[in-house]
Amino acid sequence: MKKRFTILLFSVILAFSSCVDIEEVYNFQEDGSCNVVYDFDMSRAISVFINLMPDSLRATPQFALVKDTTLNFFNALPDTTRRRLNANETAMAINSDLNVKMNLNKGTVKMSISHLAKDADELQYYLNHISNMSLDPQLGQVASKSGLSGGLSAQPTLAAGRDYYSYKVTSSKFMRVIDKVKFNAFLKKTQSALSAAKAMLIDMPYKVVLNFAKPVKKVDNPNATLSADGKQVTLSATMDEVIQNPELMNLSVEF
Image (cartoon, rainbow, N blue to C red):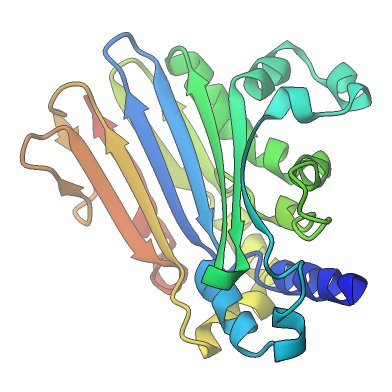
């Protein structure tokens, strides 16, 4: 029964790995550093699967598993992988943490990747390379070390900092632009999962939140909202909206 449950959980997460609620949060500090957090929430998609699950599986100990685990990304990697990293990649891994939250009784499956960049150059490097890190097969090993019975080893398909965006970051500007060729390749690869999500009315919201130490000077996307104090920029859309207009989530902020 345990093996059957693990296979089912693995299969559904693989099937819905693109059907997630995504939130990117950037916290810019006065000293030029920035903490970046990518939150992936598959709870709504998983809840659909759980509602279809027979009572016999819901009664298993594996279904009752509850996890809330934070791991340093670098420390969790095997030695063979660490030796392949260059200096910048090593710094990225050392300053990144992986958090996994799982409570199937409550329909919760969440994952987050956080990173602290000390300056604009490091932030730009991170944003342009994090998709490679999260796609690395070793992420599955990191997740499995949290005790999830291998069920989350499909998570590398959750690419943080989707690689269809390119970034330019300076001490006074944050800009990202979508690469339509890469975006179309992503849509082709995930077409079946996206279609399944749409059929189940899972709209897959995507939100970007930027918090600054002082009021921003300019925001160029008319869909972005600015907080009353001018220190927070929020841009959100559903995946379906982005598919219809890929430039919807382009963003340039001067601060």
